[in-house]
Amino acid sequence: MLTCVGLLFIFQCTPAEAPPPAAPYCDIARPIRWSAQDTRATKEQADRENRKWKRLCSAGTTAR
Image 1 (cartoon, rainbow, N blue to C red):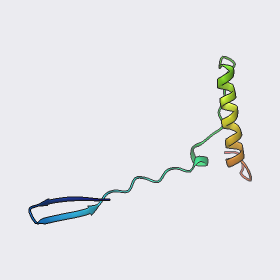
Image 2 (image 1 turned 90 degrees about the horizontal axis):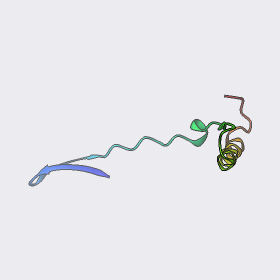
Image 3 (image 1 turned 120 degrees about the vertical axis):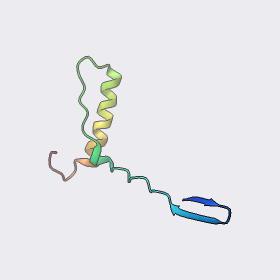
Image 4 (image 1 turned 135 degrees about the vertical axis):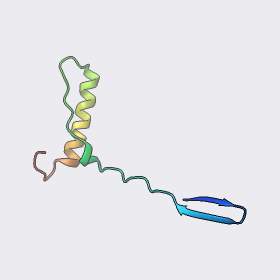
């Protein structure tokens, strides 16, 4: 995408700034801890996310 500025027949176009690259999941994700006060649904959701994290990020790595 270009950003153009001009007057009559004189234009200057420059490329738009690229958005920053998205951080890979394993660079930002961490295991989720829940408390005894959380609902069962919240605990189940945390367990699902923790399984996902373990499957994708913990294989062959050391503890962070």
